[in-house]
Length: 203
Image (cartoon, rainbow, N blue to C red; front, top):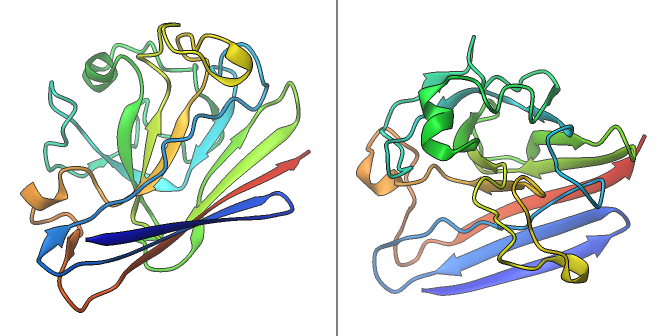
């Protein structure tokens, strides 16, 4: 497989464009694992998150999706309206226990296939806003549950628990093992092409 990733920065928008071709049948599901803290310090628990997703993919003890597409209704996974990341992160929910917080894939209501807003993150303390647009069908929200200070981030500061989060656009994890998930198979002659935009602004 041959893959190319192109980054384009225009004003406050970072556009990431992925392309790939292959000479044999293979699977491909490329994403970006950048960490964000819009306050620039402290933790991200007061960041307000909106995810345009009515379902998510529950995981097993190994954090691998079970194959179920579960409604977020009446669960701590409902971010259809802006909600503080930390508001329900300690709720007595089995899925949160398994991930030590949020480390799950959400099924975007857009369905993928065209560029659409997937998420919005807002930090009330700084007024900074991050919008995520993608043509992918899913987004992985990771709340920095395994950061323990052993790795240093920007400015040499240790990355502590919940000091940053990730919003990773993608097809659903473990898709080859779940026929009901959108396919990630790429065949010779086909062209993998997907776009994600991280748009930064302020209120």
